[in-house]
Image (cartoon, rainbow, N blue to C red; front, side, top):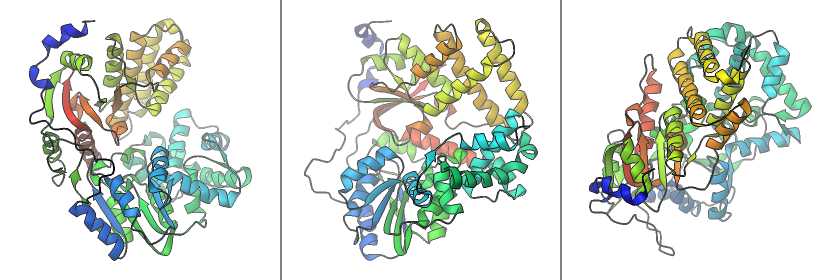
Length: 517
């Protein structure tokens, strides 16, 4: 490893210079809040308007501040703020100062189900157990598809008896439809048993918390005012549960950014914003000033979202294309502030993380779901007949070939095989860089790679970067954002552009495009 003071001479001088640089605008403590024209219109709508609203908030637009100020204008305390996750809900509880109740959607649904069942037991393997008991003769791949159909039928509130509708759902969300005719006949039966298990054994999984309130038409608290954040990522099931909690004369303000809709693959409704507008006859209210990004970053984002505006007196900022060597150099010499390293695929991030460790640069790799997927594959590899850890890479290749063969008949196999290769390449990188001598040690190495240690450098996929910001952002392999593949659907292409927009709007100061080759 080159010593830090030796690296400085190798760096282009312009990478450290902010043209017309100014400190980032931070609100001074005790300073009176002065709303923008966009915020003023939102406040007037709440105080003097009627009906429901939908705030179209660009990235970094200060929507949390806007909504907290808006909460002060509500004529009632019978109000609920529906937050994206628990950490945000907990933070809002402090800032709202009892002006509104703050909960996640799942907390809201859980409360409804609890009031009905009186007690509950959380069991994330509930439907896996039901599938194994209902149709033990199905092959593992057929059972996996059935479990996925159970999830997506609940996310979308699709009739589980409607074969045509469910096949469209499966195709839309790129499920492996190779085994659809084997799995579908058991779908309605498994969901019926899911309701019975909830009633008799009090067992629910995470999705049940949202679904049961809708499918059983359960009573809910009726709020006079509701704020709903991140509405672009709502599933049909989540939206209907939220509307169930609104009083007859209640009003609701949805907040979201259709250009940050990036979870279509996991059950979110890709057209959520437009459907919300139509469903509740919402008045659209723009919130278009970005208070996070410098001017040069905003110009890049405007190629995707023309209406996004830079804040007044925003600095020019840094935008630069760099190679792998300069990337490592910058991480060594730039002190202070947070650094975010993001990429479209997991494998390049895993490989970068391992190389950073070799260079002595402390970093953390985010993504508990990714970690679990990699561990699950390693466990499946270990179950291949004749497995010998001394030839792990050989058996990993066998698994890759067998799994690719299973899914190649699907009309939507391109994306699945691409993701499979990404996972296999990630495992291979960890195996080759580590020194594991057993499956257990390899699993430990994977777990260690995703440990959340305190560090100023964070690596994650663009999906995981949503909601994050940093002083410096490095986009690894920018040629993969957007990621274009053969047979891609229109909504997938659109969401790839949304991912690019998310990536471009994470930085408060410096944005680097890192070309690895």
